[in-house]
Image 1 (cartoon, rainbow, N blue to C red):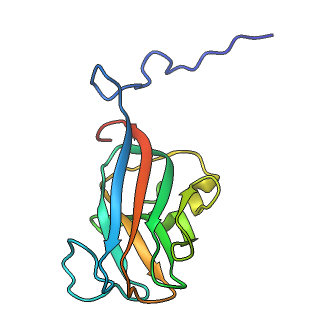
Image 2 (spheres, rainbow, N blue to C red; image 1 turned 180 degrees about the horizontal axis):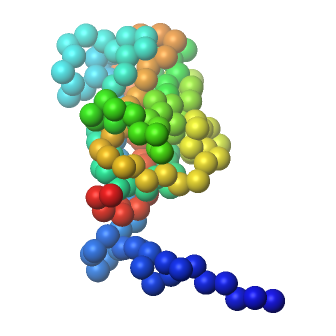
Length: 166
């Protein structure tokens, strides 16, 4: 039986240059008021069918390991949501394509309070190897099926490793 060693065993980066590690959980919130208007947004009307909401920025070099979506206040009846990422510069990357439903595809955010995990309720990353973003990307929430007409809240937690700028 042979013993095999990776050639990069001594140079693989395991920490982001800080003594306390680099494992991170980034939190983003999609919250609407009683009229279906996104709280703290640049839009004064309710979120409509197909609207793509930029929840925040996932930094370049962030290795996505997993995600959770926590519905703590249900949305308008029949609404589902996709959650993924789109690059801030609008230009796709051949090695790590942007994917608007890469984390969650059509999760039910209207029926009951719930916690969804990437492993069980996922988009394209559900069965893929971890990906490292080559550049900054928006975490996006796409509203499907119906316009928002009530208060609701979904928190998205993205788990990963800060590997530093590529």
